[in-house]
Length: 167
Image (cartoon, rainbow, N blue to C red; front, side, top):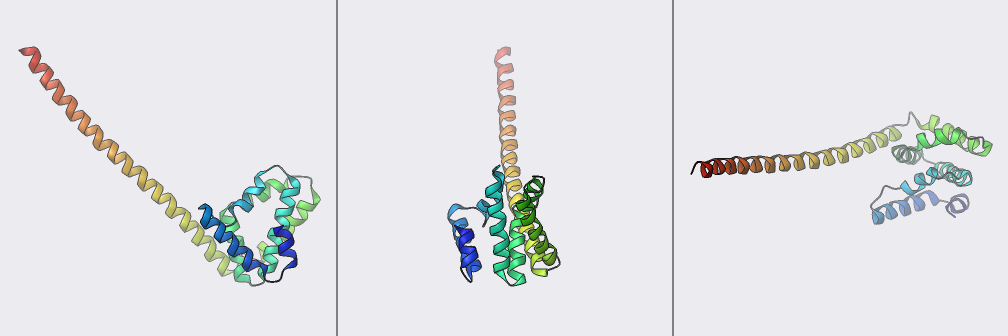
């Protein structure tokens, strides 16, 4: 459905991107995450359709800044690993769509907007990872404090136990 929309409606890039962002907010996910997850299924027809859609979206974006941002979003979701896996299949149509994607990628790899978006996505990933680590460290601090309290209680119990033995 989206491929048909992307192929036939002028200015659809902005509308589809807005829809993806709205959907991501509602589902607390990343824009286009479900698109990339579709490559995880072992279905060549689905992978081909997704590749056609992605290539059409890049084409429809028209401006290099939009194209660069779109590819950077896909990169942060791991599209290159998925394309590498799909390139190992014998499906010539998939190979053709991957080649088209690579042509766009080579054209945009020096684009400053693409580079900025990649670094922005990496910084967001690192910030999220940092927050997770901070929560874990806080949890371990709490556990350590609880351990110290328990050790103090154990020591007090030993002292009282020894005193009661002596009586």
